[in-house]
Image 1 (cartoon, protein in one colour):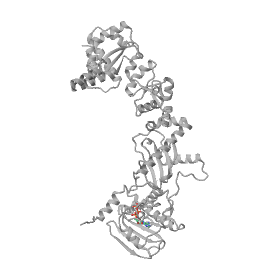
Image 2 (cartoon, protein in one colour):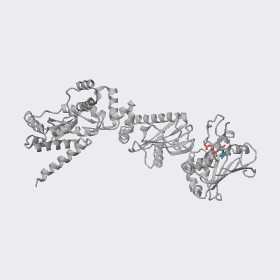
Image 3 (tube, rainbow, N blue to C red):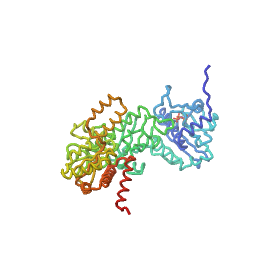
Image 4 (cartoon, helix red, strand yellow):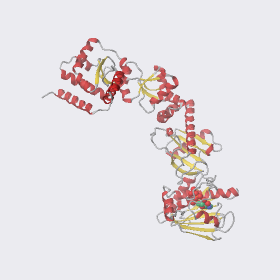
Length: 594
Ligand SMILES: Nc1ncnc2c1ncn2[C@@H]1O[C@H](COP(=O)(O)OP(=O)(O)OP(=O)(O)O)[C@@H](O)[C@H]1O
């Protein structure tokens, strides 16, 4: 035996009216929407029919809010059919698809009136003839229908809301006018509130007659400033005719955090959906805010966001392309502004450049990178040094840069987001000469060897302190380099690290495999890091002449800790212990034993 679900009406009304929408303010939008849809339906039959919505707030309408439209009205049968069943709507076709030209489609909007009203009274006269009808409903789901030919003279509908005791403020003149302007400003039908027109009916980004291109640009900048509270960097006209979309994309004037939620102001069929609508642009365009109107994008049932479907995805791609094309145009026409833009929003543009060659060239030309030559764009750096030598880590760059610079080696910091991918892409396009990652060991090869006599003296001291460095899985190397002020440099050795990893694995692997691994690693340096002592540095020179082995050990460990701090490597517990030990010991010696 089959059964049909029962529905608790009060529960449904409560759910739809109180939980579908985020604020009672949407009741104005739903009433406006119904009035405009009714006018659209009537004008489809009679293009000369009047098109007007009049709203009288509670101050002027005797304690109720009254909305009157010159729309198509409802016959007695339609009132029974459409207003008495939740989810029933006249705005879908026989197959259930939303009908073109109408704002509503779900058949629940009217219930939002219960957010502010305890009773809804509707009187209506149908354009199709028949007597006027009165429908009265309360929030518990009870309604009455009466035929009362004197209730409504003209064709159209009047809705009265009897306010809830604590919701009167939503129905006052100032509030209603503000909400009508907010939601319905662009509607093609004039809406009067307390006798005054509260809507303009025009798309702000439409070119006015007599307006020049630069007037429009200026007006758009004003419009952006009014909406967002800052003057935009630029306003880009955008259009996607397939979904009846037009509007303007505002480029923010300065850095926004890339994780900031994108929010756009969206109108559907000229009714505001909201100004926190997400998902209209690709993620990389986080520095752009759009204001658009579309006739074909779909709202969710609350009408507060867009339905995420294939159409929206296609629109997102197309709008992303239009912003990107604008960037390319800007690059061709206004280099100064391009570099200004890039410095404000480099992360989004860099992310785009990973897969888009024109953007890559734009980044290459304009985006300054941190280098040993200061902040210079990749193209300029390439001109200076031929190949871009880079290190993919900010701390490593900071440590190596002064040394590289002193030897005349150009080095670039590729330690920020997307840098390495961008350089890889450059290599894919321009060949291996374009860029190359340098290992710190390579830099070592470019440094001079010290004078042999001094070197052997220093090495003897280092041999005495060998245990200290062994503890830190570090070996000492001696070199002569600038800057003189830098006593030592700590670099990690890829081979040494690999060897250590292999030893760890070999310990657990079967003997045959361990032997094979051992052969592969061969005689690479055993330590995973090297302390490169600078023989030009006065402290290192004095170290070579020390005779007290304890002081040698203390100096070597202190130099190690100092280099570690300079390299900004994470401190392991044994590093912290070494730092404490050497610092206290130095202090002890400085203060003296007594
Ligand atoms: N002012 C009006 N004039 C004529 N018919 C109306 C009016 N207001 C409501 N109706 C009728 O009542 C039906 C239900 O309205 P309701 O606002 O609940 O839903 P909807 O507008 O169809 O869809 P949505 O839930 O998307 O707003 C409408 O489809 C329409 O036929």
